[in-house]
Image (cartoon, rainbow, N blue to C red; front, side):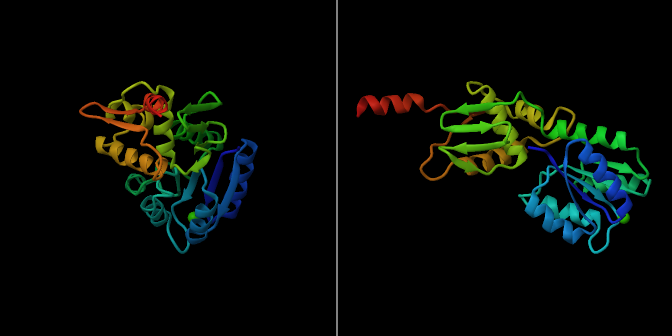
Length: 239
Ligand code: CA
């Protein structure tokens, strides 16, 4: 499935130019000319990345950015801010408001594409395609979806990456630092308790009432996946 990029920009000529180049690159492209329309489309289409203009009618890029970060569903969408202003303060403010990167207009398309790919690599590392399976959980790396007992599990990008990392080496116990480095990247500063927040979200998404919790908290060490094969075996023998 093609990755989806959303352009939020009120300059039509720039949208046309960006759309042309992004589609040529293989992305599926959506666009909006103001922040409010953008919000609706983002909620519906769940884009993988946002190119967000700073100066927009109705709702500014910064406001939109803040709104997206506040909503759990959209909090993790990577955002590249497009700004016509070159001032250092605005760029920093944009990053503080939740943007991941910025480009100052006018920018070169090859540079923008390079930054898009770099950000996607950071947030969605390319894996060897296929499936990861652990117990009754199946992660389809091509479709980027997870099912448990055939039931679709909705995961945010960070929870997906966490689970992916855990599923790659199910017998490993990972410290919070290990998970931070693997999922967020070593050059990004994130507090350790952020890992706990995302593990909590991951558990909540994976475990319905009758499902066993497959994530084990290892005191003073971190997290690991918990196999319940032994228990099942035991039950079989007992029964
Ligand atoms: Ca503008």
